[in-house]
Figure 1 (cartoon, rainbow, N blue to C red):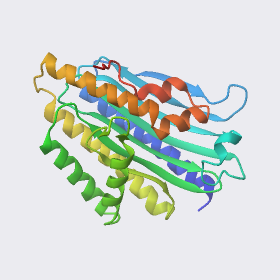
Figure 2: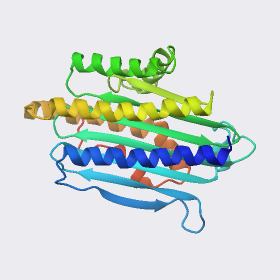
Figure 3: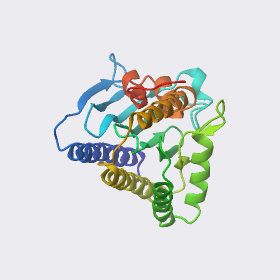
Length: 275
């Protein structure tokens, strides 16, 4: 398959998923609030792509949710080339993806994160995953979340869930705190086995996330919470912010490739606290 076709298929899917997930969010909010949409360009002087990030704030369910789509291309700065597969000798790249972070009003509903991307240098690969960060422990929710991910992964490869869960656990970890960010999920990168099979897996990851967040929210939407529980959520959000600013690859990649700063930092919670 021609490389340009692969790029179009991937970026079109990410854009379609952005629209579908935004529609679900608006439906959960009973269409009583709207997204603020911002389109941006990577380079104002020449065509190097760009994207659109959508932010919804102060909803009945979502305190803040960001749904970001990007499609950018150009050249990596020399100092970053050696860190990117396939860019060591040729700095040209193309990248598209979707990134979603949900911060909830109700502390019983966990923060949720999802992203998938396709990157093309002299090599081509998919990456992404999803994870959940609760402020209040819920073992039933945790078990069902991981069971759902395993069922989805097993449809593609029996080794995926164990491998990508381990990768997620190791990735979403705060070394300076010696603690996990949340209850994990799946994470994968540099996935270049077979485009058609990999792309099908990436689509299933997106659809599964869509199903999971709808199910979790609808189950807990009416659950009562206290100010003490809200304080717990604010403290947990502090940990979330620490990870995203210190360790997150997507944050680093976006800033290194001239992405939109507000779109990249949309993952940060609206309010967080530290003891």
